[in-house]
Image (cartoon, rainbow, N blue to C red; front, side, top):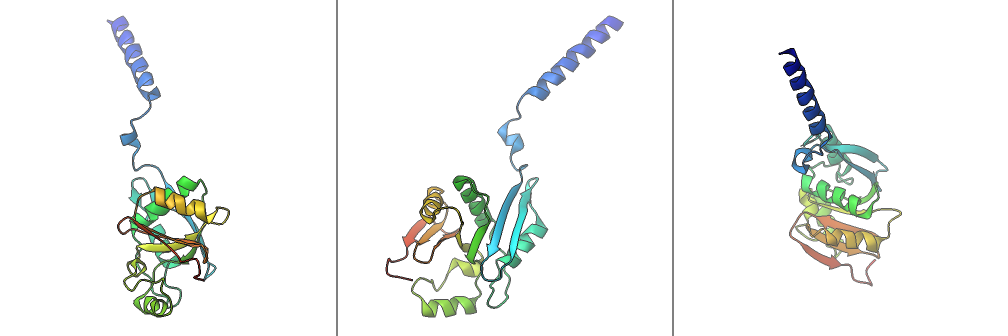
Length: 186
């Protein structure tokens, strides 16, 4: 009987080792990887690099830090940034194979700031998604703006605006659409 137990022990031990060597299904790994983003706010000089998603959830302290960095720098108003926008930025970063940081021209905009900008520019929508924390204007130093724009378009996720004269692209979490800044605009 002892031999039988020893054989069972060896058999189960080998099965366990074999099972450990098998790759886990992708579904089992979903949500476990960490996602990191970096930002540099051109108006405030603030920098941030952090993990915003980890172990299947968004990190609350990271979300607060991102909301603060992407605030309306003119008024100081802070607004929640859409998690889908952060996912788009993360995907964009993966597609262009550059970890950032993204240089931020505009994140959240208060109604006052958006109204002021709209009054002075044809390129600012009256009901901009910036008002809802669902849009961001960025560039990625070291990466050609055209390449960044094309990568954003290839995601087929939300709106993508191309502003080469102003050296940035706009991405948002609205419906899929695209537009370009007129060549004569500055």
